[in-house]
Structure formats: C-alpha cells, structure tokens
Length: 169
Image (cartoon, rainbow, N blue to C red):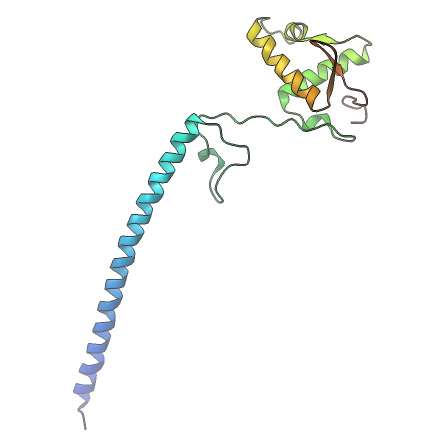
C-alpha cells in the first residue's frame, strides 16, 4: 500500500505539470494577443491616414467606435432628401434651409424667382463667382430633389405643391 506522503507527492507532481502547461498556454496567448494588438494599431493608423484624404460616408464607422475617430479632416456631405408630401422643411441641412426659407418668403410676398447672385446679396455674402456657384449647386440639388423649381435658367422658386414653414409641409 502506498504511503500518504507518496500519494501527496503524486498529486503535487500532477498539479505542477498542470500549472506548467497552463503557463505555457498563457505565454502563447499573450504573444498572440501582442501580435493582434500590433496589427490592429497598424490598421487603425492606415484608416486614419486614408480618412484625411478621402471623405467618409455619413454612416461609416465600426461598431462600438467613437464617430470622431472615423474621419479626422474629411467633411461629411450633407444629405438632401427627396421632397414628398408631409416632409418637413426642417429635414433639409441648414444651408439648404436658408435658401428654401428665402424663397418661401419671396413666394409669400408674391415676388418672382430669385437668381443665385441675388441670393448671395440677400445672405450678405460677397457676390463673387465661388459663392454664387456654391449657391447654384445647392439650388440645383434642391431642384433635383423636388423642393425647388427652375422656371428659367438660373432663376429659382418653390416647386409646385411645396410650401414653407407653417404651410403644411
């Protein structure tokens, strides 16, 4: 019959082998973790560098990541929804709301269409080609989305059926 001390030595040896095996596995996992963290950091740096050069889509991002990290220097494009009955004018981005409200006011006063040069002056902007073209681009986008009409080239007014704040849309 084995002695008690002999049995204890056997159990101690088995426990020592198990501890050594677990330590080896922990070292392997630690090394794998360090390699994975290094790879993750390299991809994060690459994505940030690309984000500086290319604008990110509005819904871009990785689950659980702060939106501020998605793009550092890229400006997101504003989305102009297609007009439909019941859609509020407040759904428009701020710059587009400004154009829309100005044309609503003109419509209520019974005044005709407005050119982009006139809009620039109304907004207190310097009437230079860059500013006028920026307004023209926005006005054309509003025409394409059904918010405005262009009855004559370069002249903009509200589209048929579209009304301004407090007017049902």
